[in-house]
Amino acid sequence: MKRVNLVFGTVYGSAQFVAETLEQELGSLGYQARLWQPDELDGFVPPQDEYLILVCSTTGQGDLPDDILPWFHGLSSAAPYLPELKYSVIALGDSSYETFCGAGKQLDSLFAELGATRLSERLEIDACETMEPELAAKAWLLHWHRSVEAELAA
Image 1 (cartoon, rainbow, N blue to C red):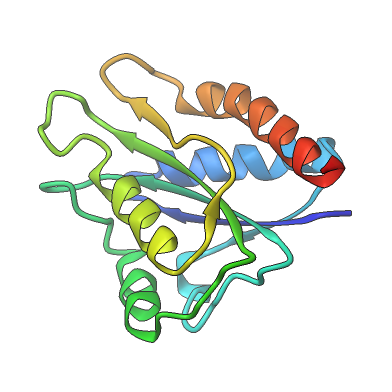
Image 2: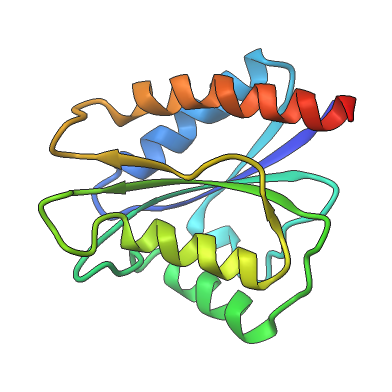
């Protein structure tokens, strides 16, 4: 059974709700999912033999939410080399801002810099168009699951 780590950054709870929804869906797809709370992330380096899904809302001028910021800075500073890690990003934002999904883009860039490989296209959920981001994330998860199956079959 493949393990999946879910990490979220949220301001008002939407990204957390999306991550919690994915945790349940992953279980029904046969994965062992672990949802990391922000206060558990200190020193957490994602294991390279497990998958990582990042779910993050954007605040301010394309900034990361305060709850995930220490982990982001810690990883940036430590700069662990993660060439075997497969990760994915779900970014929540508001397209009326110039910095749409800026936090998710920052996470995506960080993991690319750490040598990790993005498993699927970044999902950008626009609050102007999507009232229930968890539904968009559930649909995306089916594509993600097919990507995992294809990778395992290769």
